[in-house]
Structure formats: structure tokens, C-alpha cells
Length: 314
Image (tube, rainbow, N blue to C red):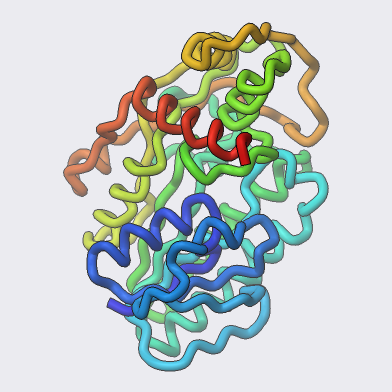
């Protein structure tokens, strides 16, 4: 297939490019490098099946030649970005989704939207299945991301119903791994960077809030299976391994052999209504995609720690 990936130089987009190229597909990576990094795809430059287009997808998109699939990953996704890049996040969720769906119509291409577990907000049910409608604050600090993705899902389904676009929607739960930005602002890159540099690990609140952490390799395998399926409604992809932020911080201190200590802080304004729990119900993915995560936290965190060590040594 000939596949366009928006946000293709980001953490997940670059790994997905690697997978698709390894599977024999042609990849067009489109990124404006707002949060994507050239070094994530540097190893792909020169590959005859890889093309890079530096472009902002909130504008009209032109791609020469046929397209079989469009994967819309473009969007800043870190809490540290919500305050400074809020309008850009809303624009890529609304205008970017509109422009990429329009391209899908023009090219008669299939379309996959990477949505997020944040559409569930601070959930009142646990775990969260795809039929849960969420508990989202539209005007809070996190609303710029949560509502951008909720709107993107609504537009994707509208194009499916009205224009017959063959769509997929993946709701991504907390994912981590190699190529994350050191200043990403999410728990694992924060904790690993702090532990490796001897700083106190910053835990917000009392650390009792939970996340379910999934290594990127499992996530992109799930996305690839979803691409090959005929499921047009949202599918949770994540690891049902749930851990508190305090336990995660202590685990990373132990795995790095660091002398760092845990320091408790008030939640920063950029984190807004930080969800107290996050746990995917992956019954749909297991049943219809024959997918479940294979990488446990020890292996995934070990790989991530080694990658961050090399980054810090540069």
C-alpha cells in the first residue's frame, strides 16, 4: 500500500513508519515538526519507499499520486503542550482532521484516526470500554486535547456515514518507549530523566492516581491489525497493566539504580483535571483483532531506560 502518515516524525508516527516499511509498504511522512523530531526519521531518509513532506496539515493538503490509506496521527499530545499549544492542538484536531478526511475522499483512501483514552476524561467507570461516553471538562486546561479528539472522532464518523469513507478509530491508552521527548511532560520520560540525572522524581498529589502503561511496540502492532480489519467504530488499544504513579516512580528508581528520591508536588495548572484512574477494557481488541500486549513493564521500561541513557550521553 501507499500510505500517508500525518505526524510521521513524532514518537509514535516514526515507529509506525518503521513497521509499515518493514511490511513492504510505501510511506509518505507529513510533519511540521512542531513536536515531531527530525532525528526520529533520519534513518529513513534515502529509503526509496519513504518520502518526507514538511507541512502543516491544518492547511489544504496536496499529495501527488494514489493513496491507499491515510493515518492521521498529527497532534501535540503532552500535558506540557496543553497550555502553550492549546489553539494548535484544537486546530489540528478540527482543521487537520477535516483536511485529511477530504483527502481520503479525493483519493478514495481508507482513513485511520489516532484518538485517545482522554476522550473518557476523568472516568466514572473502571475499566473504560468503548461504549463509555466519558466525563470531560470542555473548558478545563485538558479540554483543548480531550475535545479536539472527541470532535475528530465525530467528524471521522460523519465522513464515514455521509461520504462512505472506510474509517478506523484507535483510542490510545498511555504509551511509552524509545524516541519519547525528554521534555515530554508525561510520567515515564519525566521519571526516567530525573532518575538518570540524580534529581528528585516529581510525583503530583499523593501519587495514588493510576495509569496503564503500554510499550509502543505493542501499540503499533495493534494499530496495524486494526488497519487490516473492517472495524469502523472505536477500539481501545492499551495495556491493562495498571500502576500508581508512586509505585511507577519507585520502580524506575530501582531499575535505574538511582539514588534519587520521590518529591511530592501540587498538580501543575497544565495538567488540569488529571484523571484519577486509567485502565483500558481491551475485550474488543482481543475478540476482533486477536490482539493483546506482549511486552511487560520490566522489559518495556528497561528498553526505555537504556534509550534515555544514550540520549543523555549525547
